[in-house]
Image (cartoon, rainbow, N blue to C red; front, side, top):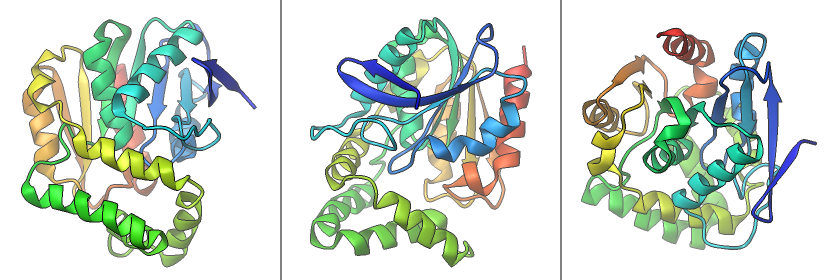
Length: 260
């Protein structure tokens, strides 16, 4: 099992392709793991260097009982890249992973060739309504964790998603320690780099599902705020578009990566 030790923390990762290429590093979101990128690995592994890993607190990585933050995930990425002697990379992040990419870009822009932001946001609490949702979520998790998770997954997957897949997803998310999930919800609620987007100078691809729980406005704000950004909207796709529309995601990434 491939493990990198960084700052007394064990991170699980997988690597594919030739090491003489600039890698694409894929970062998953809250309550997920590197497994969500399997379709992208299969698509790219024969002609690109691909790295996937489990964030602190997720998957097969260490899950210390501590406060989790987007800044911490960014610091972990920096240490992880240094441990692999990677000086420059293309980095893609989904949801909370996209927030990590944004924070990392603002902190270490010199280490990036391009970035890919998949159904994420530069600011979680856009409105009083959104802040209220986060507040209620914290209370609901404390009262009935299982019921909250079922409700959360129903919102994330949206209508028409097979019930059997929701059951499988519930089994997976319940493997995440409760203390990790609650802490990550808090850091997501606090995340806000909207006013800093104009500092990002690297080419950026923004991918957003037309049926996502994240409003399209968030993707538009990133496109307008980042000087060299393009937006691809995947029609009919929800928040879980890495698995819900894997081919379209891969094709959009490939086109963007190959572009000069």
